[in-house]
Length: 153
Image 1: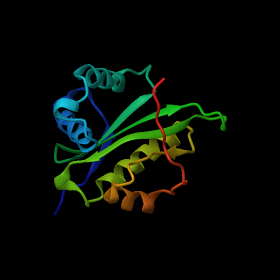
Image 2: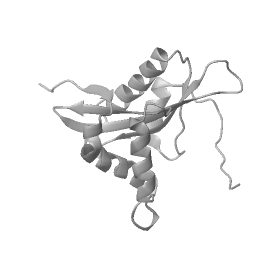
Image 3: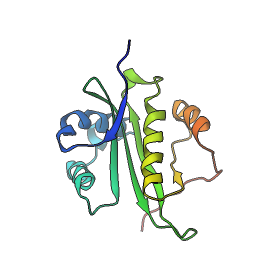
Image 4: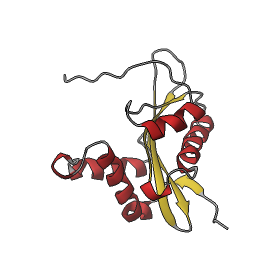
């Protein structure tokens, strides 16, 4: 029998278990070795999760004391709504744990946190070639048809 999965807010003591998941997430998107994030970004991101004044949050999925996945999200204002919205920015499950419902549970955890904050819209995006994630996202969300562009100021 498998122990239950616990989705919970990140704790200060989670850093050593969170970091390999964060590094795995970044490596998946090509941010590793020579293209890795500056360590200052990781340090600042971690500090933001623990700062109650920051609108940036993290959940982890844990089973039997082992972190198996992470989700990072933030609340922000919108020009088309009176209430804030929730952007699920990062979602990652340890490769050996995929297909076990961890990603779905983390999305549900973010959605619940948003509901508790009085927010009624959660959104996220992924790369077009991330087929495994898109299979899940098609089940739990709706593709709005938007394409994301980035630029340099």
